[in-house]
Length: 631
Image (cartoon, helix red, strand yellow):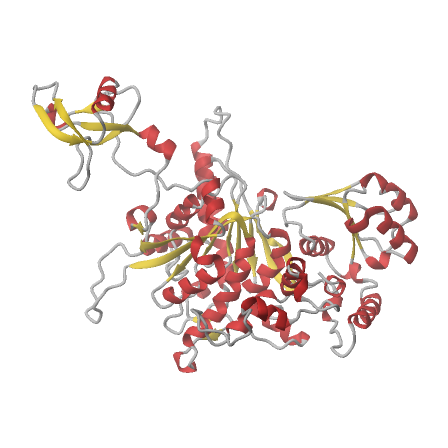
């Protein structure tokens, strides 16, 4: 990241990063001055310097601008909302963030890049005049902050009228940059699931092939969302299913780490009191379209002989028979069947299919009923929420393990958080969730508004507050038996954050396009000296720490502890799941602190640049090298 961008407290400029990566890989594509030479790049694409031949490519109006939007840095930050947080001491990284999701993702990227195991999103389906998120704004300061919702409780959103002539391209311009940035959050063995309707499924598949790679396509799940039979005389085909597309970031890495399994199905019982427990059976005789080993078997119950093709050879049969794994049904008169035990199936797991029934994975009506129950009988508090059983199944097949993070940046009613907590309570794990929801205004004619909820994000937060209260109550009722030391009382929570304007006035600085980078940097330094001399007293200190650490790659569940090693400055030790640093926000770094930092020279040290005079900056740079971060 350039010095100018660092000082402007912006998130990483991804275009700049991509250019630097290209320069490292192919330095011959750049001029002596370090500028990309487009002609040299074209030679790689087309070495014969002839007109480009036709090729398969998916294009639409606005695609290039949408891609640029994905990789431009953000000037915003995330601010902790303590009042709306629930059991924050037990959050352990669980977050619900209120804000426009593209900007929010950019704010999170430095800290959470390649740390997310599973992403699930349920974006707008682009039907019935559905809204789309608008990513177009002028780069003047006021319009920028207005666009991302800093000045208002709600976000301005556009309806996507077919009369605009860009009905599909508007939707694709919304989803494309979000998927481009989402891929960067996934771990190498991470998986993304996207719910979508018939309107955009074919477009979404092409976009995902481009973003994630066609080879990383994992499957197309058809989920039956309705439990009843539609009877619409105006339609030839009644819609009872929705689509869920699944892509891994790296198919081989996902396979290597372990493919997730769904809950076991089948009817298991133990009619013969087998000490190995419940079992089911399958035919030993091969099916009509299969081939096997042919030999004669004798039924020990009635002496009847069968000359058939069987699933295994004769020796295998004898071993199974001796192990009491062969049974003859119909009171001993039927053809032999092989036992398989429930514990064996549980160990190997059950592979998911591309058909997900409503009985196993829930349906819309059930999800609506659950919301009604959670909200004390108020109906239609949220339109068509996803059932927690559906998201639970997706988390399972993504093989989300203990401490892994699930991200949903179209949070909606908050089902993803509910599903994560439900699964955690079932197997005593601590999977974590991050939800992002636009503070979209609720129309005053809707039931939710009448019940006191002004924004969709209010429902996202309130739903999961009630889920936690319900789960804690249920667990408390189950546990007069706390004699079982393996079973811990359930306790969880989440922190609420809001997308907000940066705490640093410097983000309002507008570089002069006529001046050089060096000249703009000098102007910015002067601006910072004038505008931020006393900013620390004007803002919440914790918010400043959050912003600085988040933009320097620290997750928001970091721990902060004041160190008593330093005599003249307040220095804090920061740790998250992956890294640690020392940070000082004092307006001056003393000479004693320089000496006291010597045992910590392997650690990152973050401080205010204006706290360093020229000598101190040189000394710290000499001691710490690249581990000094002065902003």
